[in-house]
Length: 261
Ligand SMILES: [Fe+2]
Image (cartoon, rainbow, N blue to C red):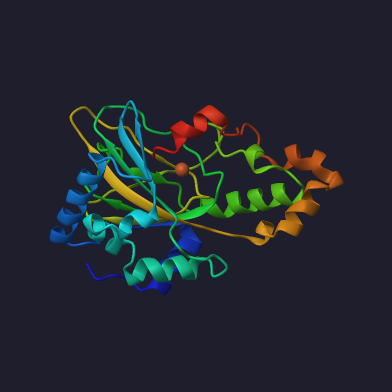
């Protein structure tokens, strides 16, 4: 498929919060990336944190690992012009550099994550390294929900609330529709983590291999002085009033589970 312009992608992200570009990377390149991801999964490499989960394996590492000559294709994938231009264009205030990257390889049936939005707001670039459809626990996103959640985040911080009290899990009664982001290996998905999202359920005998990297998004509240002043805000007691009924915070233990998507 012809790649869209960075301007078009940024416009789509502003409006809907996520975009799915099926077969963005061509097959031979994807096979090289897939081989490198498998090598990473089976290696002991300094700076790569490995977690064995009930659904499979997760690696988390600093994007410096991409400088290793064994992983050049993975590094190149996140250095293509569309990724760089969208990272810079979606939030010009951010440094637009990719910091951490994650590889997840799920092989066992398991409900992978609850619907949530992330405590720390970022723009994520996710590449499917296996064919991922609904039965492979495709990534799911509630299009457009990032706008209200960003407003909620800003209001809470303006009133002096803590990010750890941000209610990131919706109530079952809230009306949101999740769209499955499906595609063959080589599909690129870009999303603002302020939209509600999750992975689906992996069916028996199916697998899902993906890599993603992120760039943190900044906002007016990232200014240290404003955050300090907000903590002294005498209106903090109003924070519960701005939270939609039934919303929950993520909590410590659930946090580790939720980061699997
Ligand atoms: Fe998430």
